[in-house]
Length: 282
Image 1 (cartoon, helix red, strand yellow):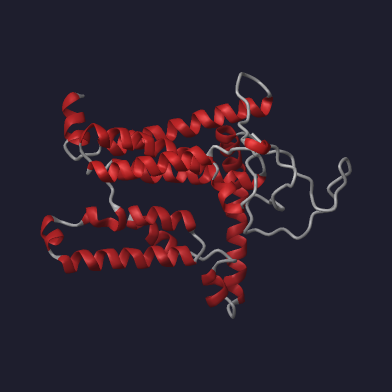
Image 2 (cartoon, helix red, strand yellow):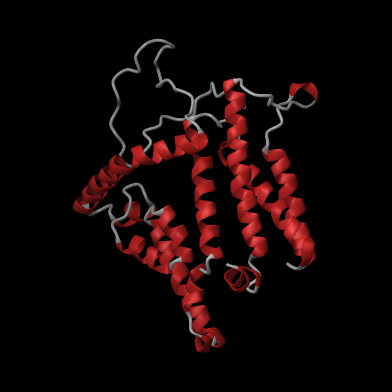
């Protein structure tokens, strides 16, 4: 174990990255436990309010920790005890910030609403990407080049440009996760680039406009995919981050039925109708 640790973590200089990732994941999990306890009214934890009763979200200390850890890591040049401490502070700060990613995106307290699920998605995605980098993957597939190719700047530039273009095509087809992971593992981006585009994507609006068959196939495939994976994805997000508050459909009374559903949009796997205005604070 000691030999593996020395060869795979210490020698490549990955210890700060490992500490940052560990601090990031632990901070997110601990924060979610605390906010769920506050939501349930259990334990000693309470919301923090400043002067005038302003609720201080944990994204605020997260930004402070991220700034301190980031500048500390740059100043330490990645070596010594200072780099390790900075990595931990940076990981903690990013964990707090991304836990409220949905709040930053919507500029509203949507923590316990359907829109708040975005925070969990971003945290899981970030942890997965950093984990891939930790085990040896580099962006744009540079790790796939041989030693001779690495010495040839032209080959490196062609590889980076090609992989970036493939990821960009996958992104234009509405395959966001595929494009992001494709930056690290190019083969994944190739799959997203050659498959049928999402019906609401930029690619579909541009190239399927006069191809009704392709447009219909895109809607069917998106609907089947979302119907298959929306349920498991929601259950995983609820298990990690907590179940959002129940939201009323537009036009429904506080105790009345939601009314007949409108036309289904297969591009919306969650079937959400917007964030609730009644989101409770943490």
